Length: 390
Image (cartoon, rainbow, N blue to C red):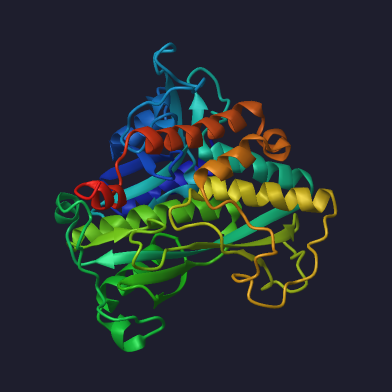
């Protein structure tokens, strides 16, 4: 551990009268999981020889925290052993929207060694960033995130099964300054406090959907950007619930409205910090991910694809001039989880870049979610369509 870094953290804890440190690790869903630690315990335990521990089951659970079958890293047979949460002090920041609280993102390390847990999303992205570094390159990314904001408090939204929520706008207001002024007290607080937490916001705007918003984060190194992305999503939800509002990053919260995207901007730089693109502001923008994307896995996929293109000198082809949405002759990406899973499972590129164990872990993650959808749910569409009329 860098002693100068530790001394700087200790000074901030003391000078800013921090009482609680959130020690977190990102899970496969992109959620921040972890523990609230008293400042004294953070210094003595989390940064000491005893260390902070958590269960490996965090990397094999579904959204309801139920362990799913098919994982090798942790299961009923192995007894769901622990891993060590090792604070990355470079991620330490004070959280302005929580009282006397700081946060540090931890790396997941094996319980009895300094080896990283390879299936942890932060490790997965770190490994790809290291591959780029070995080639003398650095990948920087930025996130353009959309979300829906509702005046309905979270508990009421849950009780209503997220039906008939009240959006903060009552007409389409894309780029609309007058309409967005009504929500400016909240959105301004998000911009200001995110910047205070070293999550740099470039700008915000109202979006096309009713109550839909967009806040753009300024680019940074791929791992740093994923950390900011995860913290931003978690923090925005905390700030919303503190004001009795609900927010969702669900990619498609209602069929009657447009979805929410996460546009990922990526650029390639040299190890000396010089841009490899024709102009430092030039980058590739990928508009395919939804706002619910795990930023660590999306970042890893971006680096893998970019390195493959560079290594094989792939030609992007000529740009398409026309309405790509109506051009049925163009190749398309998968439109269902089933189709996407099939391609990913059979991808030699993914297996080689990730390693077989990590690749199979992610394949099983998607497979278990698909199994849950196929066998554990009845949709509103089915209920309305079949309840009485069949």
